[in-house]
Length: 106
Image (cartoon, rainbow, N blue to C red; front, side, top):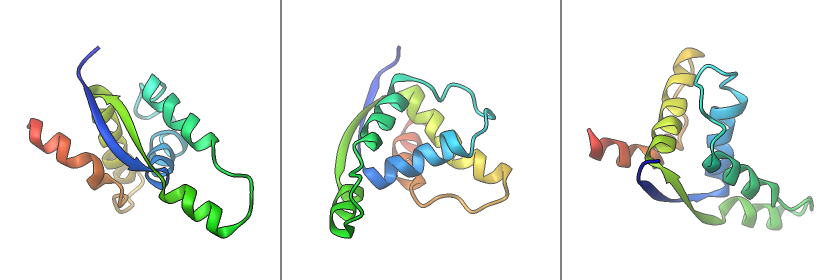
């Protein structure tokens, strides 16, 4: 296993990453079932069931620190770049969160 990267991300960001890496991926990019992705799913499972706007707003804005392997970060970056391109859609806003780490390694 490679080095890990600590990424601070909001719950909204996690939802966005899972949306592109799982929901929209449909198996086109393999390997999105690692521990890092399971951790993200666990964080989202904490979503309050209340319909109260303030409570939900606080949840989506809450920041968590995720420890992901470099491979997972690369995989997420690919999902956020390749999947929208496959579907001919604009790149998701969240992509810039992962891009600086990748840009530094090239």
